[in-house]
Length: 101
Image 1 (spheres, one colour):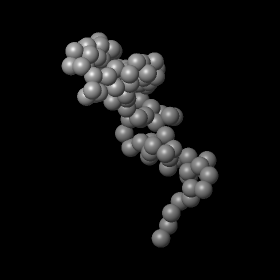
Image 2 (cartoon, one colour):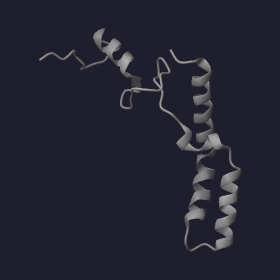
Image 3 (cartoon, helix red, strand yellow):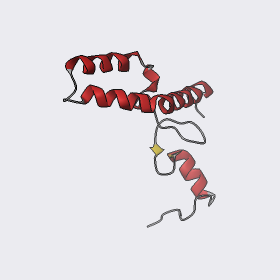
């Protein structure tokens, strides 16, 4: 089980990313627009730099929904490999069976 503080920090980041997503997208559009004046692009870059660092989507890290484990994460199921194996062995995940060959 991951530390509760790390899981809560990740939730806080997700909330910030959602909160600033539209503002960040608008500023990025202006900053990368080649038809805009150099002055406007520079101002947009400065405003982007003033936004909180944790509002950037790059700073998010995928974590297991059940345990909060940051490594060995399956995106499709939002679970770590350990929980995936445990749940599938109990028959909790539909269509998943133990392989044998």
